[in-house]
Image: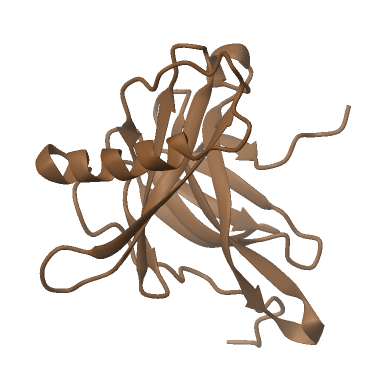
Length: 204
């Protein structure tokens, strides 16, 4: 095969290893997330109370496992974040840390969205000639039917993918590298594109 013209980390994260959280494990994750919500800086007065927490597939990268989450509040905001922990091949993960933020840009207010996506930068990757990629945790759910697999693409190159689990996905992929930006795509079981969504708002 010829040399690869674009050197970026592809499929750097482990695929999901566990089922979606439930029982005592879900309770432990929820407590960590609630603590992060309580520490939010300058939340709006009308933020409201957290509703049901929706968990997304786990992904592991650089020895840490990330379990993302979203929750609508009684004030109409969406809380989005993740619980990060040290991976463990034996026994329960340790050193749980949670990150949370909020937004009033929700799927309910944006009927043109095809995929509801959240993202957070979790690291950096240094490439050629000093170029740096933002390693980005992306999680979400389709807003159109028929999807089976979500992929992250950078300049048309697939850099991660995740099979939907209860209509939810999680990706870890390089973003903002050499002026290329991530695009999330949804595919059906036959490999046909169903929907796509950029992580960035289009001008105009």
